Picture 1 (cartoon, one colour):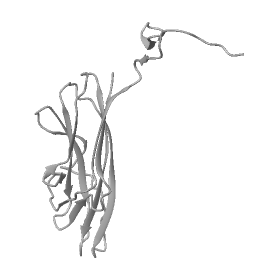
Picture 2 (cartoon, rainbow, N blue to C red):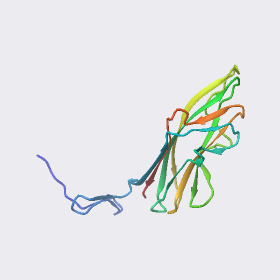
Picture 3 (tube, rainbow, N blue to C red):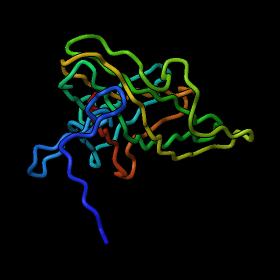
Picture 4 (cartoon, helix red, strand yellow):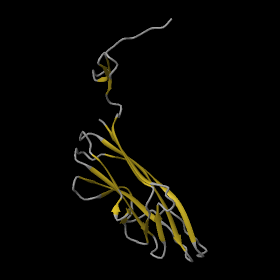
Length: 187
């Protein structure tokens, strides 16, 4: 024997609506971190090469690689996920490490680091104590929840830097794909 429970609202003990139905199958949930929108961008075609020991923007075909999303509520959070595939090389040397960061800006404001630390880096890559040469490939994953407190566009970008100016870093060397996935998590 089966039972059917018919309701148009579920509330918590404080009287707050958790789930509401309009009677025709459309359900509105509250307090569950619903995804309001998703933005995805990827580049599998271009590469970016640098030997800079200062933080520089990841730039493909003369354009800084970015992704933007405009929250619908100041209470929304942005889940920023992505990947940066890099290959550090030092022919005849020992230090092919690189630093990495995600930066965000609101509207036409300035970028600030929200993940990682490209300026004072905890380096990825490799260090060869034999000093005979090194090549290390690594895909750096991104997963950060950002609370911008705005309904203006929020733009994200990557920055990288090398530990040694004698090394080089190639981002997207084998068209693996540098990407951003941005999700608005509703209040």
